[in-house]
Length: 297
Ligand SMILES: C[S@@+](CC[C@H](N)C(=O)[O-])C[C@H]1O[C@@H](n2cnc3c(N)ncnc32)[C@H](O)[C@@H]1O
Image (cartoon, rainbow, N blue to C red; front, side):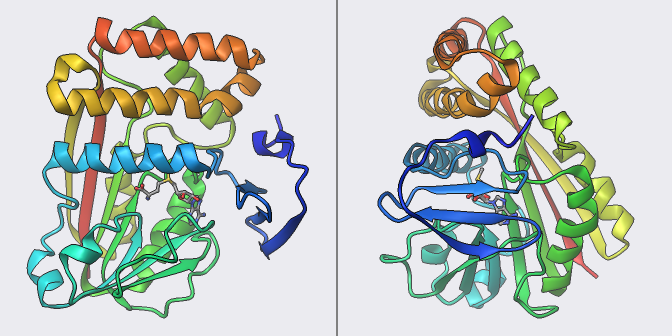
């Protein structure tokens, strides 16, 4: 099966922004809609996805009652250098610290942003532009749909360790593609996602493997792992309500890759997504999330 995004019809005039072995991103000049091709990343980077990521950010922050778990509060308060693949809000919480946010596409706001934030378009699968031992805190979240197992082990983890300074912390956060107590349609969608990802060499549930990948590097100590399962339906109160909105958008975001993978029409997929959304309040599923953090030796 080819890259699902290569099938998107975009008739606008496009220009290449950057090309490397690992990816090529194209900016449509009329809509600024970004389509990534020649990369494993298979989710769109459009307005709906930005909304889903914002809601997901609030969901995990409320569920975890924090934005991170590493023992970094004091250092961030005093002034630390942070590389962030997705936790912008910290920049306003810690004005003395400096933040670099990276993405393969311009997903971050570039016009209105805190003064202590710099955004860079970079592919973590290429060598990052930062020198060795630059950051006190390196944070990466919800990238399981972007990397193969081989890339996690041989490129992403070594690169995150390289740019973190000794004594600094590296933190990962991921959710499982499968829900706990899923109903039949949710199970069908999430199992399809897991097997679709497997065809690309990716793991739908990377978190349980990360601690052993980190241990293998022999460059980290104090590897911690914490799990939290988040309600996804009105039955779970305000948090569950937010969880339901995130899951509804997540089912929708799967439409292009999964309808292509399952060889079903978009209309048929929409029916599945609606049924899955109903099941959130019938079966009361939980979304498993996990944080893993460690100190660089
Ligand atoms: C699911 S979103 C998560 C965003 C953010 N980390 C968060 O927690 O909300 C994944 C993001 O990673 C970016 N991405 C995918 N592959 C990447 C790569 N190789 N290097 C840098 N960013 C990448 C995508 O463009 C997308 O914005």
